[in-house]
Image (cartoon, rainbow, N blue to C red; front, side, top):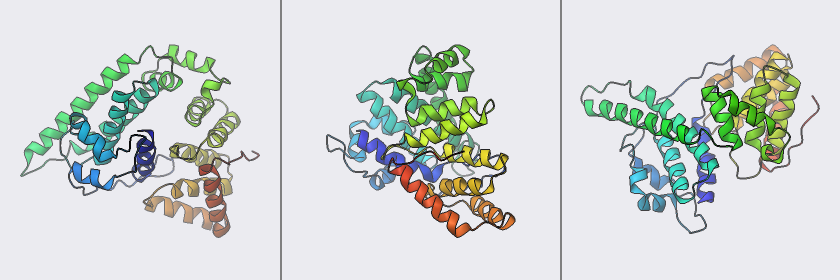
Length: 296
C-alpha cells in the first residue's frame, strides 16, 4: 500500500498552486474524463500485496466513488481516496494528517468548481455543491477526532489551521527531538520561525531538504519559501536557483515562473545556463537523499 501512495504522490506536483508573494498563479481549467478512466492511467505499480490502485478501488468502491463521477478535481479526489483506503487498512495518526491535507486540497478545488453554473446540466452544479459540503463535514469530523493527538504533524495542523496555542506549545517542546527529524516537521518548524528568525528558518529549510529520502514526496513549499527569503535578502542568484528548482519539480511548466526566471536573468545579468545546471544538480542531490546544506 505504501508503494502505491509514494508513486501516486509523485504526480501531485502537476497541480501544485504557486504562492510566491511576487508571483500571480495562472489557474488553468483541465478537461478530464470520468474518474474510473483515471484509475486506468494510475496503474502505479503494486504494493506488498501486488495490488494496483485500480484493484484497491475495486475492493473499496464506497471510498473511490464517494464524491461521484465528476470530471472536476479528479486528482484531488484520488488523493482523498488513497488516504482513506490507507486509513481504513491502518489507522495511524500520520495517515489522518495526510487525509486532512487531502480533504483541504479537494475542498479548495471544489470550492471553485461548485461556482461554475451548468446551463444544460444543472444537476452537475448541485452534485458539486453537495460534494463540497460532504467533504467539509468529513474534514471537520476528522479534525475534531484528532484534536487531542500528540503527533507532531497534527499538533502543527491544529495550530496552523485553528490557532490552537496549546498544540503549538506541545509542538515546540519537541524541537530538537528525534520526532521532528523528518522533512515535513522541519518545514513546519520553518514556517513558525519565518517571521521571527530568518537565518534559523533557512537552516530548518535546508535541514528539511537534507532529511528528504528517495520516494518521499518533495515539498514544493520549501523551494517557494527559499526563493522568497533570498529575494528579500537581495540575493538574486540564490533566488533564481531555488525558483528554478521549484520549476523542475513541476511536470507542467508555469508560464509566470518562466517569465520571472527570464526577468531575473536579464535584470541581474545572471548566467542562467550555469544557474540552471546548478539547480538541476541540486535537485538531483535532494532526490537522492544526498543534499548537504550550503553556507548561508
